[in-house]
Image 1: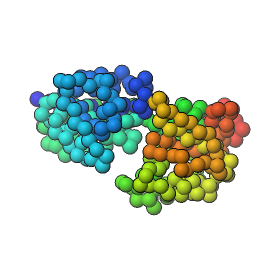
Image 2: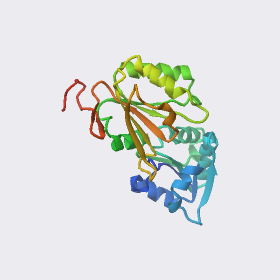
Image 3: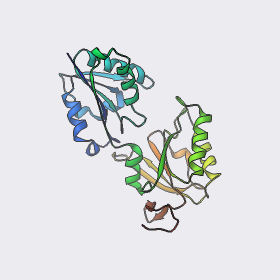
Length: 251
């Protein structure tokens, strides 16, 4: 029997921003696996007939292996991530686990896209990512901080708008302050910044500020930090980056 493993991006949190394909995949799955808070976020899609496997942080590899094991027995399996499963999500681990199986025993695999945090936060803040931009995570759990900082410095020097994921947590309190210092080596203190917390959720908060004035202590794990390029401007309650890289352009 050939099972199906669907790696599902649930979007940024608000139910209105889940795709129809994601909803269908979760509802039709016989087994649903995910980090417990993500399963809570799609609890309205789950039924008593489904096997639901709730996981903890740092158990991503185990979850992927379990999902593949269930699917290899012929079952329909949904492995859920927040945002987009291919952006700091479960897709890489799941595909790697499937690739380790004998070709004759591999389940079918689908990866469904979702609205990732950078796009949700950008929409809330206006259009700060309308031209070239980069996404970086400040978490050093899987990437050494020296490498994170090297990439951050390169992006800052390239004058790209920037979305920072995993900016700060109780166990990682200094990385965002250091990231701000690195960006300030290449950009003026007046560069616009948006701190978007819980984008699309009932608790959504947006703070528009600048590199000089940003309060790193107000940022948590559910905040996406958006840093503008040299062309990004504040227009009322919005940050807008024009679609041309030339300063002053409105194209």
